Length: 91
Image (cartoon, rainbow, N blue to C red; front, side, top):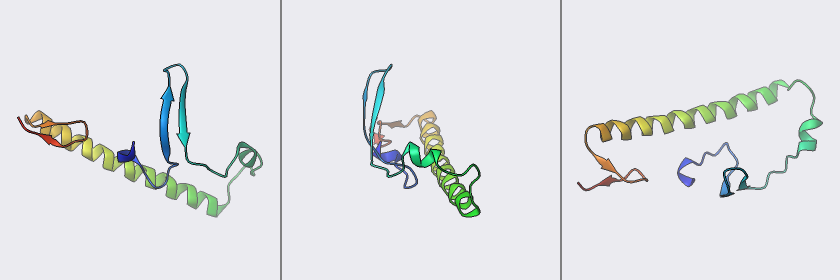
């Protein structure tokens, strides 16, 4: 999980449970459902800019992850072998 950590997202420390009832242990966030329900219907210009920045950060992270996956699969198709962390294994 730490390999996929992004600074714009809440950190997740542990995942446990079963397929029917998964649980996540994440960092504490001071924002509650009460805060969200009390917000105005439309965001301000500053809030829209903040949201756009977070979306951009998420997209950049996904593009970087996809680039790594494409690179690893391309090398695997050429016959190279890698472990689960992406390190090259000896043949």
